Length: 439
Image 1 (tube, rainbow, N blue to C red):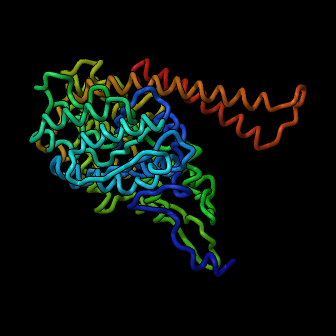
Image 2: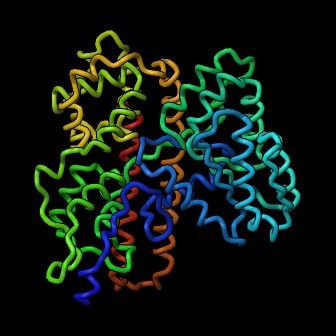
Image 3: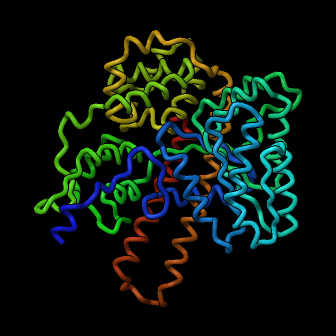
């Protein structure tokens, strides 16, 4: 056993997508994405929040012949025009071909065929075989320059994605909102209208603790409870930052069997790579969002009244909408009745670069366009939370029904599950209250 741990590789994955036992949490979000009545969903997250990993996890979960869906992972990275997209879709369909053929769907990848036409043809063939293609589109920001050059084709793609013959999950950063500005002159609705909007936010507490301790790994890591709480406080449950920090703290050796050492102040300084991610994310913010984030950074913690005073030229309802969006994407967090920067790494980066950030050029996405999208996202999240409450209540009923009449002695695992579900219910109801009250 000593030899095993002395040669133990660092179990935390930093810098690449994960799935299977390396993927933590998100199961209820996955369930929602696969069962919502909307056939097209836009999933928004900051860089390194786990967008690609989530799509890859969904791909793995639905790849078996028992699933209603047949997944097709379509990566748009590097696509510059509709021809590039056709080539990438052909590669994606070729990879998915062994999943379709046993289900009676003939797939003939053709790099020369228009991607929108290929999708419509696939959807019709799958409907006849009583299966449903699940299109998982990654790096959707590539659509922005294509939209500027090929608006008619983009409208055609939008129709193919929203026809209902297939289910589509598109992931990107919030920059994709720029599509609606590019499409403002369409006689029909802009591209993103009709997409259900969902945010990819931090991990829940249970999944975050499991990730810190690598509970799904063959060789879990020993972590003191106090240190785990400290890691969560500094990272705010951000999956990439958890792994980034734990990677720094991991110690293996003959005497120290896969543990995390104590955290030092130096460990919380972002390196050049992380600072680059923060800069890109900041550039994607609208002007109001930048003002809010810099104001909170300057004040360390800020009340709603202080933020309203700092942005006195903006209507309070608009400020509340952008605060909601910044919290959902992890830029900001709530500390009791005050606002703070989302995590310690970003807080330090903002303080170190404040002067240059104030002078940045105008953001690529206007406030009005993004405000409209945020309002739609907030409405959709309320729908999701109500769905989650229904699922949690069903889980509680299942546990109660499994207990024989009059029995009071339940297993420790059952009690823990019951308590966890009750806690999740409380949190979901509180989140609904926060959204409805404008917090």
